[in-house]
Amino acid sequence: MALLFKKKSKQWIFIAFDRLTKKVLAYKVGSRTNKTLKLLMKDLSKFNIINIHTDGFSAYRNIITNYNLTTTKDQTTQIESFNSIIRSFLPRFHRKTKAYTKSLKSLNIILNLFFNFYNKKHNKYFDNQKTFFKFAI
Image 1 (cartoon, rainbow, N blue to C red):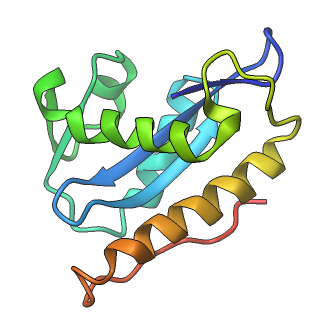
Image 2: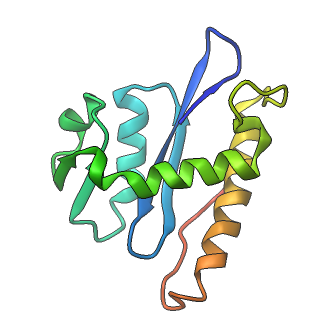
């Protein structure tokens, strides 16, 4: 999901979403580069992940090497639906909006609050699961 602070500083949100539990496992905000993806993969290393399904971003093939990687739109519908939920609840992610975030720090706080709320909502179905979040300030 893309986000603009200024036209020249486009930021992307990389989200790792568990399709079974419907929870956000980790996320990173940054440029759409190998560096941001490596930071996300580092956070995901504490989970027992076997399969990863992605869109066609070329960096995935270079960085995600320890997992079964599938690049297909058929398997990414849940994360695309989740992106729509983010846009519904957080006005700064609406397309062509007047609400915007001026700082990366504020953005991370807002996303942490939203993802923790979202994950707690889904805990009633998976009480034995734990969330692994910290504030990225």
